[in-house]
Length: 185
Image 1 (cartoon, rainbow, N blue to C red):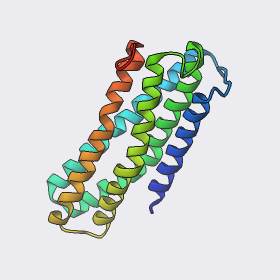
Image 2: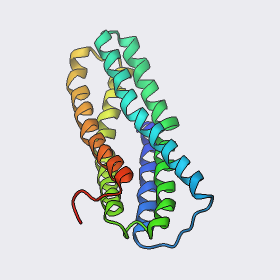
Image 3: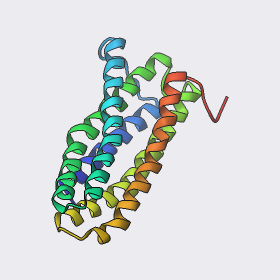
Image 4: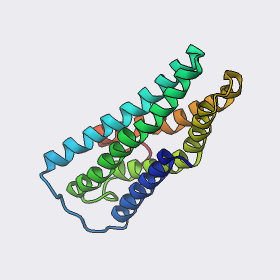
């Protein structure tokens, strides 16, 4: 397992722990002014969400170039971007989100917060169970210099799982901005 995968799994578990603590009503208060938490939360969303979109685009362009050197570079860049962009973005988003939820009475006090937390948990579990193994296989194939035909199916699976995991982020973004539940009153 790569360093990127280990860091991603650790980050996912830490995020799930933060959500679990908040879900169970562990008391928390803002540790800095509300505006600073909100800024850090939004920064996390931009960094995490941006990398979620841009990373696959780099990889697809590298694949379409049909150049194994470009693919190997894209695979290395993807792994580093996960460590330096995705992981910090997730942590900024989740931890500051948990702190911000205290202003609304906690993560279980508002239907839109409940739906957001459940969606994030499901997304995290699927990401660790489906996207990460597919990405690991794809990166390993690139590092081994596999031919493009061998990479077609792993790239398609990684793209499919990544898209399915990424779509709920749009729902969470809507819930956070509108503060209106989608599935409950």
